Structure formats: structure tokens, C-alpha cells
Length: 407
Image (cartoon, rainbow, N blue to C red; front, side, top):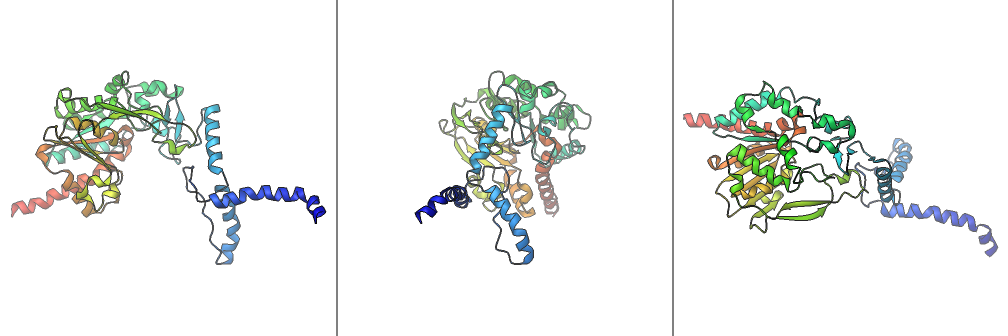
């Protein structure tokens, strides 16, 4: 027996070595997914000849996706490509200059760099119907006794154009962006144009002294948002921004908001935010902040509420895309209450829920300032898609109130 084992020792060792990853694969199959996609599932026990014939390929795909230490290998590959080539494993990201990285595409099924080219000069113009829609939106809210304002936020490619990929720098440095062309064009009515602020020049100036976009982030963040908030309340609502007590700041180190797209690369940046607790401002983030909307607040998800006991007895309502979350707290120095709701998920609400949400948010109209806040890539559908249901809910409420008033 001993001679037999010695004669086949090499074979036994090879089987043992090959068995290790198989055993680890089975043990680690449910561990974290480091890839931005749905991994292959373990096939079920075949219940038919057709399923039995398909099972080997499905099992092979499962093994490929759940190989032991695959996550570590994926991260190593990502780091290697980035360090050697400045490359990412996805078209959604692009390396710029001086360590800055950009969200280059909003998906994997769109044109490379489309998230950058769409906001820079010569990018796709705003949706042809957007100007008409905005004219109607502001007119309808005006008829309801409200005067909402809108901020179109310039995104990183046009604010940090000198740090964009070399071939895009001149294009992104131009002031003739699609958002600027929309505001300069004849399709917007004078009242609509006056209600919209696109602070491209202002944010290019602010970035000289205060950060607006951390180097590895897609969304804005940093002390520059304080100055944007200050200028916006003055310009749009006539609030003397500089007169309000300044907010102290606090800093922390945090991973990029898009780091999940390329696991393995260190994207930690210094983040500067307002010290709301130090200012005795009650800050709340998430669905629990709005018990009045408990039925569907979890569906909305991106919500925040701030109460400043030392602020004026006035409310600011921010209706936004995902760019509203990081600036909403900076407005708390100017208002007794700031309420923020993102519209990314309003399409999932029923008509009755939408009516309830709209009625709640647009309450106390005499003491409320309304700010629609969307970043510049939203010109191609996000703005209209996010606001239309509010617009329709308000119009329906107005029509329902008309017969009641007549009676």
C-alpha cells in the first residue's frame, strides 16, 4: 500500500490542488459580488430532458462567476489596468487629468463618453419639447399662486473642464453648453427664463477657492456648495444669504459615490460637509424623516428634512434628481425648515399616492419657497420625467377644486 501511494503521490497531489479551488468556490459562492452585474445562478435540478441538456452550460457559467477568490482577482485586474493604462473595466468611467475621474456614461448600453459630451458644447440639444413643457409648468404653478424656481446644476465636465480628457477640454470649456443654449434660445418665455438659474460662470469661479466635486465623485459635494446655496437663495428668492449665520464645517474621508462601478481602486476623498449638529439643526435622512408619507416613503428613498430652530419661520422645498441630497443641508441656515425629495422613483407611485405626495409637499404655499434642482444631463428627459407627475397632480387638484368652489 505504501509503495502504491508513493507511485501515485504526484497524481494525488494534483487532485488535491485542483480540489482546493472547487471546495473554496462552493464555500464562497454566496459571498460579496464585486462586479456591477448580476452573476450566474446555480442551476436547479433538471426536471426535463431539455433542462438536463441546458444544465452543463449553466453550471459552467456558475463556476466561472463564482470561482474562489474571483472578487480578489477582479479587483486586482481593475487596479492593474488603472495603474498601467489609466483604464477602467467599464465604459461608465473615464480618467481625466491630475487624478480626477469622471462618470463617462450613465449605462453600459449607451455611447462611450455620452455623459460628458451631452453636457459640453456641441452636445445633444435639450429635448425639443422641454422648453414648451417648462413654459407650461411655470405658468400652471403661477396660476396656483406659486412661484417655483429652478437650478440647472453644471456637472463636473464643464466645471472642471481643464481636468477632462485632453480631447474634450476645449469642448467642455466652452460656454455654449446645451443648458446655456436652452436659456438663450427663443423657445423659453421671459418669465420661465427668469425663473431658471444655470450657474456655470459662478461655479467655475467658486471652484478656484472651494471644492465642488471631489476628484473621484460623480455627484457634487464639498464646501463650494455653501457658496452655491448662498448665491441661489439671493438670486432666486431674494433671501439675503450672507446675513444668515454661517455654518461650521466638518470633514471625513469617504469612498467615491461611483466606486461600486470599479471595485479595487482606492477612491477615498476628503469630504467637507456642514456641521448641522453643531449648529443645533435637526437633520434627518431617509424615509423615516417623513412619517406623513409612511405608506410610500420607502419607495421614494432619497429624502431629507432639516429643522433649524433659529431660522426664519419659512420653509424651502427642494424637488430634485440625485443632485439634491448633498446640497439640501447647506440651505438649513436660511430657513426654519428644509424638505427635500428626489423624483427618481415617483414613477412607481400610484395616482392616489402621487396626489397625496403633491398635496403634502406643496402645502403652506404662502410660507414656502420651491426649488426644482436638476443637473445638466437631465435636459434630455430627466427634468420633465421627474416633474411631470407633480405637475399633473397639481393640475388635477386644481380642476377638482374648481367645481367645489363654484358650488
